[in-house]
Image 1 (tube, rainbow, N blue to C red):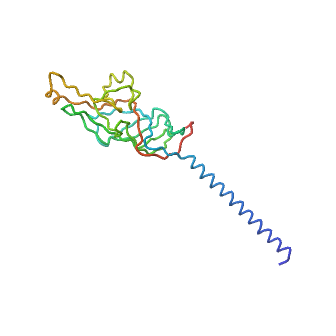
Image 2: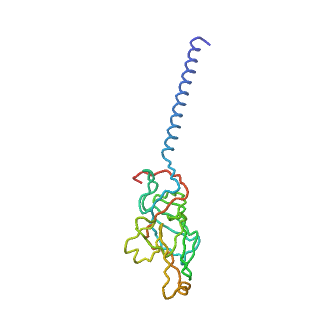
Length: 222
């Protein structure tokens, strides 16, 4: 091999090394950029975070069954720390996990619901674990409970709804009412039937996550 040929081969080798090095830098930058973008596009929402829904179908402790489907819709955009998790109108899917109808002896009905997913209008499914917000954090709703200030409790209704629906107040801190007539005494208490949990269509409720969720936040345009 001539000196000229040897120099040419060296130049080719050096040029190839430079190209490979440059490609490696580009790939590393792309990998870092993609990783950084992924981190910025994933949000973990902790257990205890709250959001609001509205019932799309009525439900009662009188005739509900364990496993029965319950459907709500987000009544407003769901945000966490400025990140949009799901838009208003998204479907909230749940089931009845415990139910007990009212019985004689002034025993009130009970109803426990658990929600397992949010489905956005675009079809994105977000797995969740959530219950209706109650003071004891069990999510169990009881019949024959009264409202205090509507803004302080899980379920908020208009005055007309509260007066006409006979809802038993599904929120936190509500006081059980068990009136026994002065003339009936114990006999009246034994024969009286307790109140059912009655939730009509369009009833608004506050839900709380029982487990954290990890989700890619949406743009405000979504």
